Amino acid sequence: MVYAENSGRASGRLAGLQKSMSEPLSAREPALHAMLRSETAAAHSRLESVLALLDPPLTRERFLTVLQGFWGFHRVWEPLLAERRELAALLTGRSKLAILEHDLEALGMTRAGIEALPLCLEASRLGGSAMRMLGGVYVLEGSTLGGQVIGKALQGAAWVPENGLQYFNPYGARTGAMWRTLRAALDTASAPAADEEIISGAQDSFALLQDWLGGRLSK
Ligand code: HEM
Image (tube, rainbow, N blue to C red; front, side):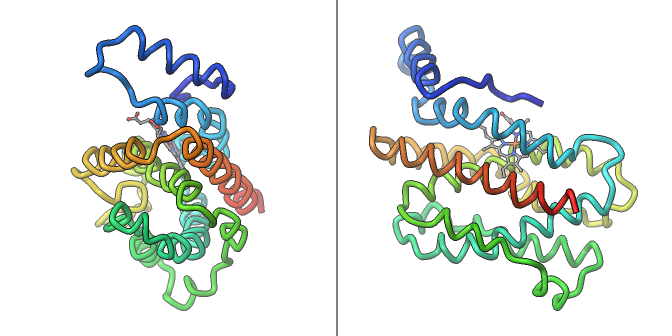
């Protein structure tokens, strides 16, 4: 599923500018968000393809491997995020570790088994400036939007536990509100130098997830 047309950095900026010139002020999309979407569209499509969560049949094994991979990522990524006091207000209520652990246990894993899972140590490369990390937050929070589609695919799977799996739909009815808060934080952070860092942080996050999750799925 392609959710935005891919384009290079220059054409992405141009498209954003053209859009903003042809629309009334109230309907304008904040330029940073439009750029983030276009600059990561190809990476999103690649990740979507490698996860193949919408390719039937969605097996328990595939979904478990994906969740285990995300646990290994978040276990390294979230402590790094917690060091960034500038992001603390935005990150309140967005941790996915407990949710992942809930899902993994619901799929039959023990606490000890979860703690023994491989860690994505490369995620430490995504640390650094708060702006780069904000790009990563954009990527990980975006998965809750695609999660609405993935949730529907899960509904048809016989192996899904009775109380459901929550990683891709952690916010339920609050999904839209949580995304709007993130968009507002992007608007606030936006400035020419910050935009470059946020976009490169988002691109690096997608690339890292692609390698990490793709590698685990191909074993
Ligand atoms: C098979 C898996 C996936 C599918 C089918 C999927 C599908 C989608 C869809 C349909 C949207 C647009 C939602 C909307 O505009 O309301 C979306 C947005 C997004 N997804 Fe995914 N997604 C998947 C996996 C992921 C993953 C694993 C990540 C990151 C870890 C991710 C990151 C994003 C981001 C950042 C956006 C927001 C784009 C924007 O700025 O509007 N997606 N996804």
